[in-house]
Amino acid sequence: MASLPEIQAMKRALEIALPGGKAVFPNPMVGAVILDSSSNIVGEGFHEKCGGPHAEIAALSEAGAAASSGTIVVTLEPCCHYGRTGPCTDAIIMAGIRRVVIAMSDPHPNVSGKGVMQLESAGIEVETGVLFKEAELLNRVYLHYLKTSRSWVTLKMALSMAGRTAAKDGGSRWLSCEESRKQVHLMRASVQAVMTGAGTVRDDDPRLNSRSPEYTGEQPVRIVVSATGDLGNSRKIFDNPGRIIIAVPESVSADLTEFQNMYEADIWEFPADSSGYGFNLTLLLERTASEGFGEILCECGRGLATTLLRKQLVNTLSVFTTPLILGGEGLPAFDELGIDSMASAIRLENVRSSLSGTDTHLEGEVVYGTD
Ligand SMILES: NC(=O)c1ccc[n+]([C@@H]2O[C@H](COP(=O)([O-])OP(=O)(O)OC[C@H]3O[C@@H](n4cnc5c(N)ncnc54)[C@H](OP(=O)(O)O)[C@@H]3O)[C@@H](O)[C@H]2O)c1
Image 1 (tube, rainbow, N blue to C red):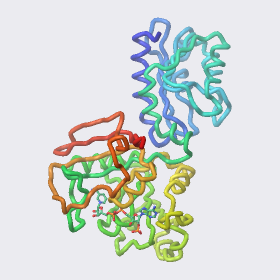
Image 2: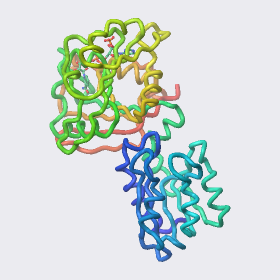
Image 3: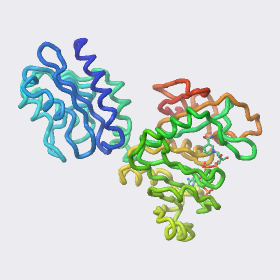
Image 4: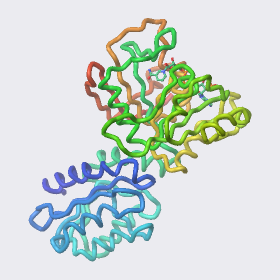
């Protein structure tokens, strides 16, 4: 059983893994802490970016000789294969580590239990499953990508108290308070891509970039999804720097040459969906993942939100509820989702709730109903 210092070290490892963020994709975020034989922390490290040193190597190099006879506490099973870097298991064995405490096994086919086996064959004691749930949440984007080859979708919406996304005339500025809008700019900075529907582009003329003063990195790629190719006269999204992708069915892509020529937008075309409406959004999310977009923040109206939920493509729902009533005439957040009973309700797990200025922020991972 893991000791108290080991559990505390795992909490620390989970915390220090976080700054890896979007830069590590398609790798996982990993943190590692080395304890010496008296349970003092002698080294720490995290995986900073894809292709860079793994957390275990960074922690071992900080610990140096102090790692000998110590314990390494790591959020994911150490790798045992040659990828962009050498196997971490070899480095752990070479450093003279006696015990390895792991939060979760790595389902990657190149690792998947083989890392643990190699360590145990070298006579090292291994314990797996310490703060498993927390590690699973930390690496939801990585785990989802391994399972589905798709990007993780976080659907963010600002809603009135009764779940309306806009007033009757389509206006939704500003539903959320200033503090929530600041948070949204940080959310945009934390992902590789922000996605919206053509309806929002036409109605709101959004920029969808991160204007957070704390953020100086690259702007997220912006993706506009359209079934008709009609983006109206809104152009703010194109007037701001950064890559833009317009995703449309093949039948309308020829109408978008203006955007290609004037704004260097990438036009992604997909075969028409068998339903006769738009295209299959699963194909879009496979393509975004293959382009290196681990997580996509979707900020859209009810049209795209409904399509994504119907296809079970939303992974995290992030809702800012504002103390405001727009009446039954306000625009609802979703159209019909085929939910006929409580059993088929869409629910959230790992729910995080907080106050955001005068709004309530509720976020969690989506669990689709069973009916
Ligand atoms: N409160 C909030 O958080 C929030 C956020 C954003 C927007 N809004 C409000 O929402 C309203 C706009 O709603 P909306 O439903 O029109 O906007 P939307 O959801 O942003 O866009 C809907 C459009 O997405 C495209 N689309 C959806 N599924 C598709 C598929 N499978 N294939 C291809 N294209 C697909 C279609 O484009 P085409 O039109 O080209 O067919 C569809 O009309 C505005 O009033 C806006 O202010 C509120």
